[in-house]
Length: 245
Image (cartoon, rainbow, N blue to C red):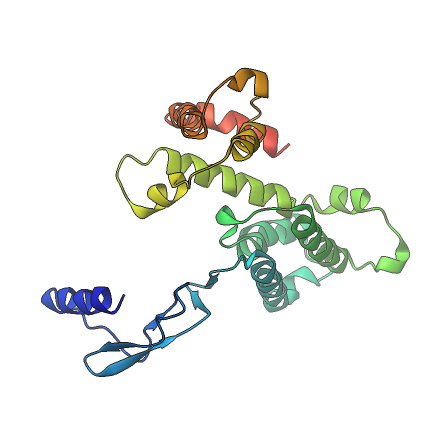
């Protein structure tokens, strides 16, 4: 890794770029890579780092990232409280500000999340609390969430995140070059038959339909079908509407 970073440093200089040694960090799953030297400067080894507002780590930090996004959503809500808490402000304007400012803030980077039920509930709890504040009601009033949503008409945060994920999947499927985004998405290890069954389940393919397909062939079949569908933007939006209904 040290050799690669030194090569990157040299190539960067050739095009007029300079590596900031103080801001450069490295992360690895190899225990023996303790220090890296670049031009007699030590590069710090970290367990996780934040880049473009998103935490990156060897472990799954989705739950931690969701908590960060929810706090960011509340922070954005607070900056716009004069709009949301103004009783004379029309709900239509509050909805517009919420959908354009709060939702993108809360779901930033959601395209790569695993939206589990626990994560979905976290988002729903936060969004319901915001909606109650907008309407000026309290949880002890025991007004059903359905009735609250009928008044605010705000987009559901979980469905919004699912649409974002589906749009991103279509974007990746349409990629025709060899950038890392698509290469990492299609990368696979040596999988067992059980993993092949899991792939079938995830793609709504039954064991009977799979027959004696190996995992590699199955992944190729699924990927080919999705890629062909993604080439048509109108065809790709049909499953998205099913997800977001």
